[in-house]
Amino acid sequence: MAVLGAIDQVAALLLDMLADCKEVASGIWLRVPTNSVHGLMPASRDAKLDDDARALSEALADLVRLYQFRDRDQLSCFGISVTQCHALETLVEQGPLRAGDIARRLFLNKSTMSRVVDALERKGHVRRQADATDQRAWLLEVTESGHALHARIKADLLRQHKAIVADFDAQTRTSATTVIRRFANAAAQRFHSATPPAAASE
Picture 1: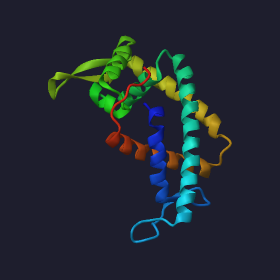
Picture 2: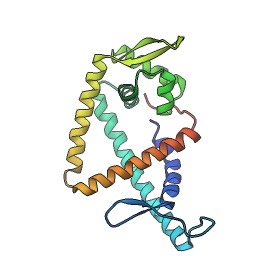
Picture 3: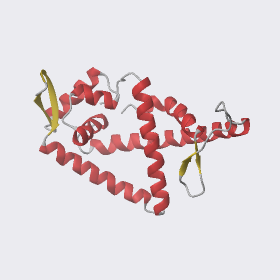
Picture 4: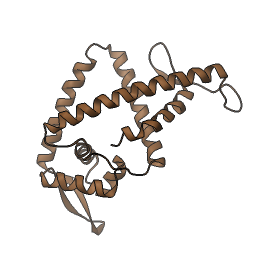
């Protein structure tokens, strides 16, 4: 997914989300109403919101940057690129799908998606099958080799993530997952409605 190219939009997303959320002492994020009939926030809270959004945006950018380099180095050991891995994961979780459907989910343009599919097919991880609803179209499905590769990658990621969160208490782990998932869902809605497909590293 072309996440780094969308960092500026993520910053705007943080402003929107922080406008109707606050972090309580327990670490759980709750909906809070705005302060006036017009939905405007007091100047003091608005300034704090800017600071919080900026700090959170920087933290998110740092996390994305670390994961980008880690994924690139790690996945090369499996003989697959980051973009190919995302496409494979999408097919495992939601397939069979048309190439265009995968491209929309991953914010990829048509030519990039075509090269990604060709690479996965050449490596034996996906195959084409006729689309029963449209004889002119093809569906992509994951092969046994693709499922096995996906399982190995997921197991390796799980091992790494367990090591990362091992020192966090259960409540912090749960709260972090909830917040990250909210950002991911809101970002997906925002990007799908505002961002044209972009090229990504294959």
